[in-house]
Image (cartoon, rainbow, N blue to C red):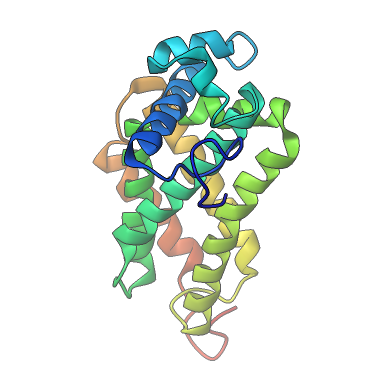
Length: 211
């Protein structure tokens, strides 16, 4: 997105605080309605009514409903990755990074209760965007695991394989607790989860360490 003014085109970054607040309200409306009602069942009129903005105002920010949906997915991706990055900043032990990172993900998902449903719908609404969302998460995760492997903190396995396997574990734990129960996974689940990580990723002792 560019930094041009409010009326310069769909999906543009508003230049004023009022414009930014209006766009945030529309994105929040999309997150709620797409998550709870469904993308196909939600109209532009529904979005503007939920955001409490005029119908014509919508088109200062987005070409249509799909453009808002795409912007929402990109926004959620950025917010999630930024939130986790801030939470783990300065932590040197990789296993502590994993613990804090997953706990932060679960808290984020609790704050954005419709995250799972919205992202799931992207697979049908815009498959390429769905792939982008998961690849973007996977790229940063892969880099972190690769660095930890180079430092000898974890086993020297293919970092992308590890990233997708671990993300899948966290995804399912989030479904079980955040999505279905409306709460973070219990401490006992987190302890068992970390045990799996430690035993699965810890370097092997002896001259074969790393394999």
